[in-house]
Length: 554
Image 1 (tube, rainbow, N blue to C red):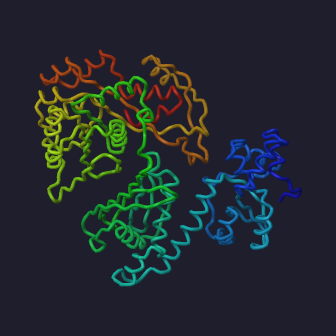
Image 2 (image 1 turned 45 degrees about the vertical axis):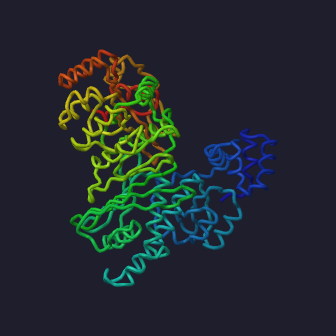
Image 3 (image 1 turned 90 degrees about the vertical axis):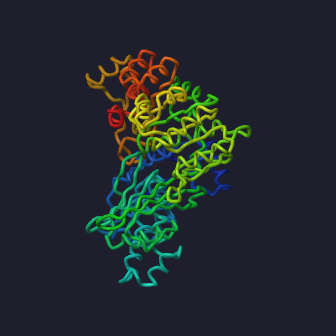
């Protein structure tokens, strides 16, 4: 316990991190904002959160804890009420005799320390934690657990009980709060998907963060049905249907952001599995310069989308960022002078000024049928969500031949093989040759966490890889793992690309229906750089790692 009551501002001045004048300015500003002093100094860019932590740790001996590494006993959480935890932003960590270690954002908040001592009866030992980590931990250990306990307590004997359905429909019910908290927590962690996986004795909730799944928590299997039923109600699906797959969507407002949630429900042996795709509608406004292109590839991509007519393909597996690239291109092309129409399944993001059509195969509104109708709507630019069959492919390519710019996606491993894929689907080679403008292939790789990036020494084999491609084998970094990246060493994602532009000689080769190897040999002679090369360039720039490039390309 701290005996001498020192103030944060004085400590920062003593450490020569801020001046007396800056402290006085921050205190004046604090009277208006009513922020904590630490938050005020951070808001004014005078200090960083890490600097505050280091000053408290080194000058006063207050320990710093990484909450993502802590395994906290849920019984311990009951010592401090949720109201008090949220009021003072604290979380109990460890109990030793009559002493309680508590994580705090501001361990010099003596009013909070006295309040905790009086309410718990324990002597309080403060530890400092990062604000965002503490906020997430409080939500996880208080709000979520409270809702889970209430759901279990109020669980009906029979699911056919009318009271059971009524409880789920209410937005104030424990199960509704629990689902909302799960989605909110997933958004805060930057998850793209939430998986509810029913197993024999438990239900596992997993989050996909930066492309990889991680288990968030496990629940009793008896909670699966009530959670799935609540999600069905939110998605306006049939809660009585448990034998067939269902798809739906709903929107949520979270901290001034609108989150579009796509729901897929699939019956399995142990119950219905749910996957919720989280789409932040505010994240669509990207510029081409933010897609992570190299200078050469950005120039090629901009050249492709400036064509008056023809078809441009973006290829890659599911979850490789194809839709983001297409939407960004559409936003670049969008203006009052052009009529842009898209046909998608599903419509992921709604963009102002663009006419978007949703495919509904169950009533005959397929990609091909929609495309035929779109051509009668006087379009300038058409975006086809995906070319899945020969009929859609042929209509799309014929549309490109008749004065329309068509953008679409195709599932191929690389850019060159897209040519053969179209021909294998039954499209005439002359149609491919005359309408195809270019192909962009891409993958998403995890970005090295900037907070824990450290220089990495290449092995001899890795050095040879860089040298053989004429790249510098220096500037390589690797994340060691920290609280910002949840100890993974990675935070966020970026794309790696390869682009093939179709020239006259390549058109002749396509008409003759040459093999993929011949196309590849020709484009390599013309200076084609594959995804592995683009990935290694980004490794040498300290953006990602060799392991990530190998994971998605080899």
